[in-house]
Amino acid sequence: MPKQNFKVCLCWRRIFKTRVVEPPPDVKNAFNHFSQSGTMTVDDLLTFLIEHQGENNATKEDAQAIFDSLKHLNLFHRRGLHLEAFFRYLLGDHNLAHPPSSKVHHDMTAPLAHYFLFTGHNSYLTGNQVISASSVEPIKDALLRGVRVIELDLWPNSKGDDVEIRHGGYHQLATSFSYPIFLFSCKKEHDFYKTLTSPVDLQKCLQAIKENAFQASEYPVVITFEDHLNPNLQKKVAKMVTETFGDMLYWSETENMQQFPSPESLKKRILISTKPPKEYLGENRGDVSETESGRRNPSDVGEHFPDEDEEYTVVQYRQLIAIHAGKLKGGLENWLSDDPVKVRRLSLSEQELENAIRTYATKIVRFTQRNLLRVYPKGTRLDSSNYNPFVGWMHGAQMVAFNMQGYGKYLWIMQGMFKANGGCGYVKKPDFLLRRGENDEVFNPSAPLEVKTVMRVKVILGEGWHQDFHHTAFDRYSPPDFYTKIGIAGVPEDKDVKQTTIIEDEWLPVWDQDFEFLIRVPELAVLRIQVLEYDTTGRPDFGGQTSLPVSELRTGIRTVPLCDKKGNKYKHVRLLLSINFGRPYDL
Image (tube, rainbow, N blue to C red; front, side, top):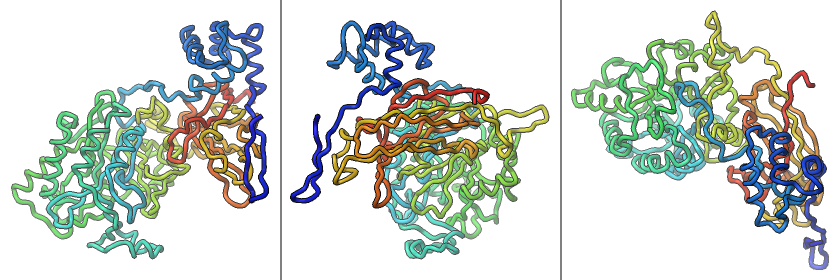
């Protein structure tokens, strides 16, 4: 057998034998059951696909395609598959637990408010919220990953004669902030603390959106503007947006839209969403205007009385806005009012939402049945970290805005959620969030939930690390000690995490361990998998991760490719799982 050498010192090397992973018992049992005399024909494979893998619509052509995909292997025999070839098929890309090429299959003809949208926050930032650079690259990357909502902060440049994109600042947050580095890194301007993030040109951002908007998905892209501009600069924005997008731009026929259009009707269209500049039309003279996030706008300090040219400018700018944003006068209860003749978008910070659901949980659900709710990270997340998205989703929030430039548990969950529905960036909300009862009652997120399904997962084995990593990547003196953490991310009652044993000194770990998960809201559940390498001297090393929508998992013996921290798939690293669902009364 091949050997691996690990140099400990000049005169001492540790030598480990490497092995080829053998078909585990689950694979052998399935092969023996469905094959004849040690060979599996096309017809046998078709029976296996239907009866064992749950692919009820599988055809003989599907089975033949699998056969054809294995012909290049020395393991393939013309008479059929023997055990080793069958095993390689199970570990291959024809047998994925969640196929990346799955098609859009949700009803896409309902109003936009009936969908969760893959939503970015401060989409132009490359790093943290205080001193990082702004660039078009994060915008391109987000769109190519299927993100459908891009946020741009519009600010005057230093001369006040042009528009730039940058992270502007914080209002009351900064005055009570406990981190000295924050105040040190910021310059006070009016009631804002201006960050030191570098700007990027608006035109470049718009062009990047135009060129990349529909590469990953043909469904609409929404651009949310956080607008800090005066009427003259708004006029420039209107001209740039109109000239850049042309016929791609969706123009609303009326300001008072009673219902949002559907994603299907908006294919390959760009929609602008921001707060209409009412203050410049004299409708609210004397009021202090706010940006969509509720922060005071420094460009509006003092009263402003528009002349006729400015009013015309404002009309042009208002016409761009397909989705009107803003908060009604008064407190939270007014913000959540559902106007029967006009739909709109409301923005709340994650903290505002958490406070709101204590009193207004059902009111939020009712509001989001027709209107759009955007949730964004609280201002203290200067490191561009993220938050639990299920708080928003469970209350119907369509736009749970995330910082896409980093990595971590919640971003992995977000990526997993939007692998659903063909990865198009739109996931239909569960019916229970859209229904109203006989007495106009809606779903209560605080009410107890019953178990709907039992998910049983066996973590069988893993492979590919010795091909994708250097042999000392995990341990300088020995092969890795891998273990797998597997769990459900979802509503609080569904949250669960389990862990396999640690397999020491092995590039090809075989765990063969069973786990069971009770799931109450499978429509919102995400299967989380992370492989780690045990380290006695500190934190475990990262060995790969993935998150997958539970509602679209395929049953049977399946392979699951793993990704790096940024969500890019490794070439060879993968796990072999057995996945099955049962009814609650089978417990």
